[in-house]
Length: 88
Image (cartoon, rainbow, N blue to C red; front, side):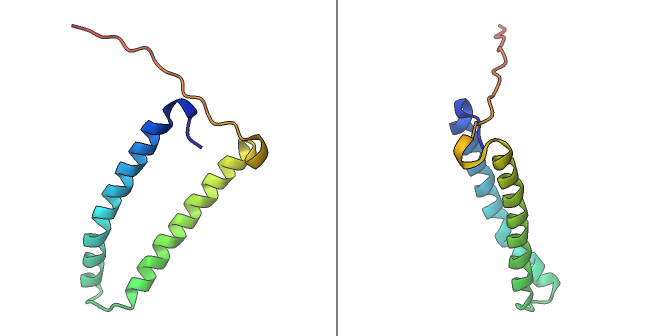
């Protein structure tokens, strides 16, 4: 789903986002548990919600993949490089 010419840059950016979200999820889960007064049964609700959000994102990604040709005729999007003007 990533442009062929910019694959490494987009993959690196995705890795940074995943790392930041992994850093944030622990404290946010702790805050959630303190709000529900440490009733650990709610952790299943939290994990199920996150799993459902991941499923929704996967469905959107799959639909975009199929719209671009699917397994047999997939064509990655092309990225238009903008000219860079150096000043100074």
